Image (cartoon, rainbow, N blue to C red; front, side, top):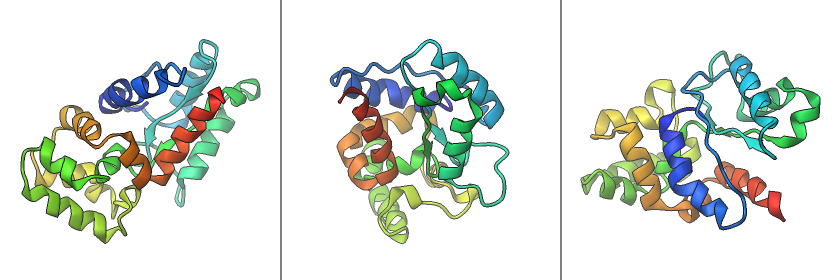
Length: 192
């Protein structure tokens, strides 16, 4: 995963959820150094120690993207970068456009955690302008979900992000975010 915020999110929400299903998650942060080469080396090391390895990187955090690069092409590039014999153990996932997009699944949760009732309407207006799809909240890297939150609220990424996510819950995030839901579904299938 990319950094501290994602690591806290995995520890507080995903790990307990998956442990109930017999899937044990060990988050490993690469501290924001996200591009194919460092990711490749880290994933190959991890693949020798775990039954399966997955990624959780922000699209915006991924460095050295080429013009027209998409979530799908990045995920394919990650998978193809590692040794062929390890590819069956890898489930690459890129979050569109970044972790904070998931938080727009519930404008109410943003308002509750940030203790500002007016933020519910603010976040809801943003969500509506992207057809109520949190994974589409994006105009540019300057107006990415985290930038919107930081500019208009008292949002602190590593503290508030996981707390808002916990307030929302995985069920609501999955209902609102099809890409995120698809990733979790892939992971759930590992035990079926």
